[in-house]
Length: 132
View 1: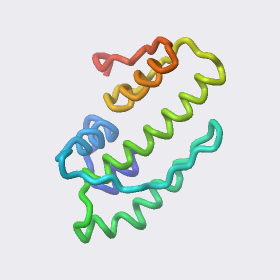
View 2: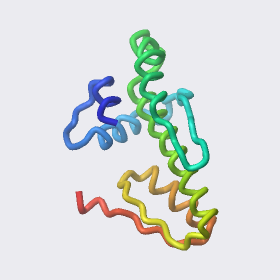
View 3: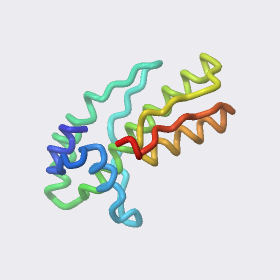
């Protein structure tokens, strides 16, 4: 996330992840989802291709004005969260888990985890933003 934020010249204050989430919220009615590399194999995820793809391919589109920083942040966030939710769901199914502890404060990811927990009828413990 730090390197992605630097590529887009987003601030590190208060954190790159927070600023990516806030940038992704800009203009929800006009934002576009950009398909990014999605690599999940079993319980393993690979993020290495995401940043390389963004640096090499999408930067050109950003400079041409075909996409916005908000589009990139939204697409990265949705892709990464989908990968993480997929392996969380797989782990829940294989272990018959009755609880999930979530350490991410973001509302979108937390919402996805809550939905998965409703499907599997388990309790989810969310990290409170007051502890930031």
